[in-house]
Length: 129
Image (cartoon, rainbow, N blue to C red; front, side, top):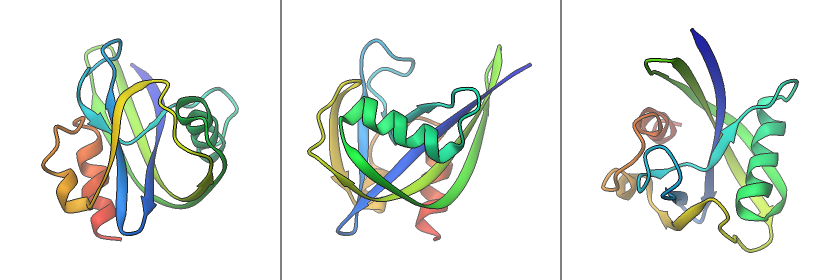
């Protein structure tokens, strides 16, 4: 079975984390998630995360800190391994390119949103860091 490696950013600022709503063209349209995307061949997780955030949010000088956890989801045709990394700084204002909305919430508040299933274990792991 095909394994797809994906990275996600838990962006933090002043005690809050960023969640973004998936657009209507995406799987799980309307669900909230930690931003990120698929790793390309020969990319490290950190390189992939920086590239994805630059593409999705038009930000730069992204500082990735700690690895948080990996969530594995099995689908009929593939296995998705989603790694979460803490992002502590960046430059620029966020401009959405792949999402319909974003918000800053406390980790506890995030549990009240309809999160993508693979993101829930990552949030729980983040709460214990």
